[in-house]
Image 1 (cartoon, rainbow, N blue to C red):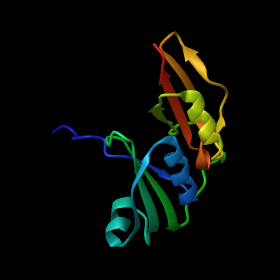
Image 2: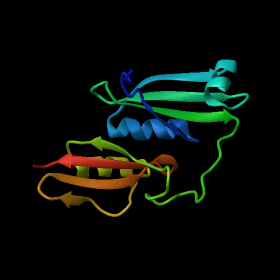
Image 3: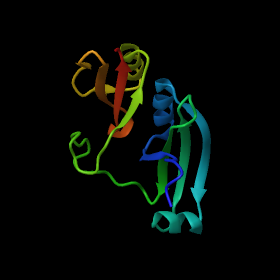
Image 4: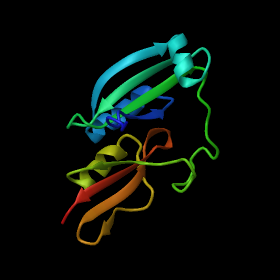
Length: 146
């Protein structure tokens, strides 16, 4: 049997409102917010006594989703180092296709985003960059130019 689809990518955050604002500025839409707790959640995640709040964000085309999760109990733990480099095992980035990379970077900077280096050009096909968003999340942007 094959998978049906990729449903979402989950990101654990401390400040849910700031993360929602960041991804909204990027162009995602808030689909829903909900409180999650109960024995079913404990069993599914493998932690006891879960109390969390989630915000489901979706891309404008409706196909891509990011689930932002703020754990109230048990308290979320921090990775070491707190801001790991992009080549850390298990750490990946989320990439979004954008119409105007310069405008997108400028708007996200107002929400605390910082470029890891600079916007680079790959041949005459793409302009690309990595930036850090809330909680150190690495977001990659790609603007097709060719």
